[in-house]
Length: 485
Image (tube, rainbow, N blue to C red; front, side, top):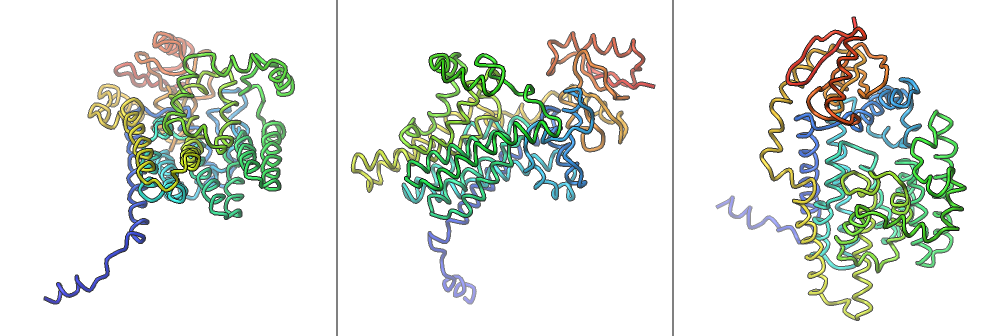
């Protein structure tokens, strides 16, 4: 009886007070999905040296209060083991992950941190959407983001600096909408620490702010963004050993940034042709716009994403245009919230701003698109039991091979072996035609791996290494461990 009285006396949570619980549940579930995908790939030897080991090496050195050295990239470019991460990409923001390496040192920490960061954008997406469309659409759009294909592809391909961008862009947009300029500016500054080209996104947001007739703030953002982009790529990165040629992808317009800019201005039809030159480009552009049912095109907020999209699709690197990698996650939140804003604008033009049925229909459509794309992209793997098993033959051989490599050594490995060794060795990426400062080698003679042309080329290199003085200490199912006496 007393218990029954206590239950009746306990006040029920109002719907308003339940929102943090529901948002927390969505965020936690999303983070769990992302972490499972990454951790399973790590466990079945489908994670890669490029790029998981690169980030792991940088964060580990930050955790030791050292510059973020990435020897794997330093040796790749022929610039030595003490090559700082900010020379490769200007991403000093990785240093904020260093304290987590004091708790657990290894790539699993990165995978979990990335999962949490991607999921942390959900509350800000919800708040922005709720102000424009209401509560139920806000939940539907938030879930659509959590299941979105750009996020799926990003968490599927190891870890990257893009892990910080959805959260920071969501904060920028939502806090600006709320009239809270201090956190908006802080998040914009955070973006500048993510990558050398994020100044373009900051400038793009400044363009959007100008459309709101906020002339001073828009001008400050544009000038700050372009200045930061020029300084990081043109001054800071070369000063610490980076080279512009490492990522120069605009030779069709000119050999230098200045000449390329002139080439683009004087040949506008070439620019248009380049933007839509391949089926891969047009397909990726469509998949970026379709999740909002194309309504992001009605919002000036899309200007925030435009400079980064132009940078990608005007470049000659195929990876930048593809839907398979992490690059689309840079703009996923911007385009999604632009879709929310574009739909709200459409309702105002049609004088249907108070029509809840229309708002519900559009947000259900957005969620439906996200759901229908799940099987097509990386989250679809999670629905297959075979994904969790991996290749048992490869896994057994790889685990045994990893156990044969002693702690503290430098080892050049086939791409998939690096993540299993990076927490206790200095890992370099095995590649053709290169002399490694590594007494240990882990190769695969049966399965093709980046950056080789074929498995036969990998097998031939193993024979060359043996002929050059290395000895076999392990070999099973194509996985080979070599040691130089």
